[in-house]
Amino acid sequence: MDIFNNREIAVIIWFFVVSIFMITQRDIRKSILGVFRCLLDFKILLFIFVMIGYTTAIIIILYQIGFWDISLLKE
Image 1: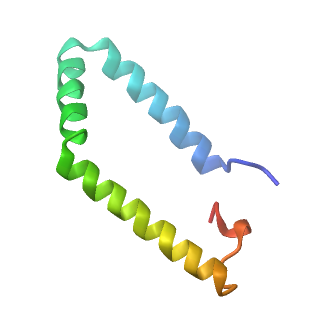
Image 2: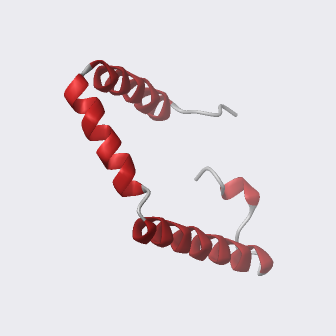
């Protein structure tokens, strides 16, 4: 069983290409710092952690009743 399919490999390659381009541009680097500052805002982090907790709770409940299995993790 392959870990990554062709689509996932292509996404990873394009991510690195775009990342290298963004790192080389001074204006984009400054903008990226602003985006990271916004992502680290308390309200956004709270929302992200609530969604992670919600998803984890659903998976645990489905695992307990036998409807979810670890083999479904990648799907």
